[in-house]
Each structure stands twice: as C-alpha cells, then as structure tokens.
Amino acid sequence: MGETVDLLVENISQLVTLEGPDGPRRGKALREIRVIEDGAIAVAAGRVALCGKRDEVRKTFKARKTIDAEGKVATPGLVDPHTHLPWVGSREDEFARKLEGVTYAEIAREGGGIRKTTRAVRAATKDEIVAATGKRLDRMLACGTTTVEAKSGYGLELEAERKQLEALRTLARLHPVDIVATNMAAHEIPDELRSDRKEWVRRLTEVILPELRGVSEFCDVFCEEHVFTNEETRAILSRARSLGYKLKIHADELEGTGGAQLACDLRCTSADHLGKTGPEGIKALASSDTVAVVLPGTTWYLHLPARAPARQLIDAGAAVALATDCNPGSCLTESLANILTIACVELRMTPAEALVAATVNAAHAIDRPDRGSLAFGKWADVVLWDAPSWSYLPSHFGVSLVDRVIKRGRLVFERGRHLWKDEAPRTTLTDTEEK
Image 1 (cartoon, one colour):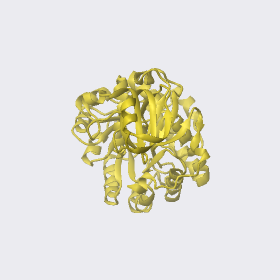
Image 2: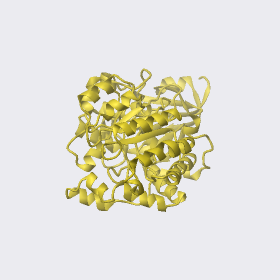
Image 3: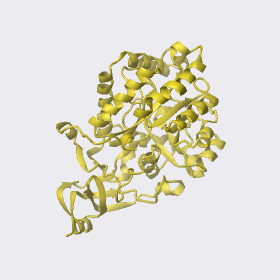
Image 4: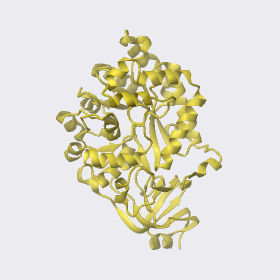
C-alpha cells in the first residue's frame, strides 16, 4: 500500500468519471461515458488522486477517512452555468396569466416580469438577498449541483446591482457550492430611463461596468430587439472586454436576431438560450469555441413553440451545455437534474449527452475546466445517487435521487442533511477571486 490520501470513496456500483480529452465535448464525444464498475475514488487536498476499480485504488492508497458509497452510483457534481439566483419576492401571479395566453413581452410592457423583481430587489437589504439566495443554493446542493453561475440584473442601477453581486460574494464564503458571478445590469432598461435608452447604455458602459468589475467575472447582455439590439449589445460587451470581463450573451431567446453569430464574433465564452437560432447561428457555434448553453426548462415552463435546436447543434459539432435558468418568472427550479429529463424528452438529447452537457461542457461554459469530470487533479466534486444505473437518472424526475454530495473532497450533504452548516464557514478564496 502506497501513500496516504485524505479520503477514499469506495463500494461505488457505477463510477462515471467522464474522463476524456481537454476541452468541451462535441458530436459523438458527447455520448462517451466512461463507467467503472465497483469503483472507488481517492482524494488528496480536495482533488482527485485516482479513480479506478476498488481493489486497484485500495492497493495504491491508504486513506485517513473512508466513505462507503453502499452501492450507489457516482458522477461528477453537476455544474449549472446559467442562473439568475440573487432575487427576492415572487411572481406566481404571472405564471397563471401566462397559462391564459398572456405573453412574456406583454407582461413586461405592463411593468411585470423583470421590472417587478427589480422593484423588490431595490427595496431589499443585502442580508435579505443573502437569505433568499442561500435557500436556493441549499436546494441546488440537495439536487446535486456543486458549482453555479449566478447573474445580477434585478437592480438596474449601480447600487442595487452592487447589492446583488455583494450578496453573491458573501454566499461564496459561506456556502459550499462554488459561485461564478456575472454582471447582468444589461438585463432590461429601467423604468426611469424607458424614454432614454441611450443614457442607460452610457451608464452601463461608463459607470456600472467599471464600478462592479471587482465583484463580477462575466458580463452578460439580454440581446433582443425589445431589450438590447445587436449594436447595443456589441457596444456593451466590447466595453466589458476592455475592462477585463469574460463575455456571455442571452442570444436568440424570443426572436432570431443573429445573437448566436454575434456571440461567436465577440468570442464569448457562451451563447445562451438559442430558442430561435437558425442555420447560420448553428454553423457559427459549431465552428467556434463559444459554448451553446440551452435552457429547455425555460421553453417548457413558458410553453414556447420554439425549442433550442440541440440536436442540430450537436450533429453540427457545437459544444452544447445545459442549465436551469433558475429565475422567478420563466423557469423557477433549482434542479438541474430535472433539466436532464426535459432535455431528453423535449430536445431529444440522449441520457449520455445530457449528463455530459450538465457537467463537462457546463464547466467550460463558465471557464471552469478544473471540474465537471472525475479526472486526476480536478476538484473532487462527487454526487452519490440512489439509482440502479447512471442512465436511470433522467428517467426518474420530479424528486431528488441524491444520497450524498462531496464538495472539494468534503462530505457536505447526506440524506437530507446539510452537514456543512455544522462547520465553520470556509475561508478560502472564492472562484472569482482565484481567477
């Protein structure tokens, strides 16, 4: 027996490592699932030291601590690369109206939607936002998510946007789920500037983006004709890049405006939504490094006729990822595991493609190549699922099949209990600060 590691997770019925070449998976590679029967994971300093057959790993390492997986299925922790987590209030009244045929755009014109949540966020304290968002992170962890991207965009003025991002910064120190913060002040045009959108673009580029660079890593823009045009989006993101932001775009969600092509032209890390992306956008994404993040829960929740062309994107060679789009109005869920089911049923993705899209590719959609698979040197973010096989996961939806969650080599969730709450808050740097 060789060196001593911190943790050994053994007696895993199926260990899904998702090991493979560097970079996001494309085409047929999205279906390549490496499965080790009767597997084990050795963890040192929070990172994977070895994945292999139980006997092999036990012969190679001795461990200070051992976790018996009790025959559960193990996968990498899920990565959610598109959410709007920091908000307060609710909009269930709009859910009922949408079922009666009122559109997203009509509700927005009446002062609902994003604007309603903006009013609530502006009136809330930072502590209230922390409390509300922390509960959502708890539910995400209980559903197997270990890393999440989270956007501002319900403040629509400097101090309210700062309040959202600082709430995320606080939670990044308190909560085991890693948080990647995105400045999305370009989410809508505030009520007070509806008649002067040029002034809002000026404030975004000259005040808000420079002021909030220290508390956000990415910049995202809602690129739609009724929100920000392609020209305005280009101006905002070009300024963001000059300030050191990484870039994302809400592209082609409601109309095909060429947002996917714009995202590729600007070398964005990801283009998200893509419900109305056509052949030219698919071609652009397939030939670029921009990850195509599809959000099938949103089109399902809003009962939109157009679905993101996930099959065409995969077949063309684009790097496709999945996310919840967790937000108060158009996809109110914290469960990325349930999104796997919707992706399979609505977008005709295979279970393997969906799992890779919610792990490996999702990690690349937020520039976190150090997770998403259980390979040597990557963070030991592991979910143990109470399931007979890995392919069972998307077939059983509406409940959490999570038995335990290990985050950076530490058991943080076990059978309904948030174990991390009994420990001292972590004092390590947040992901954003590490970058």
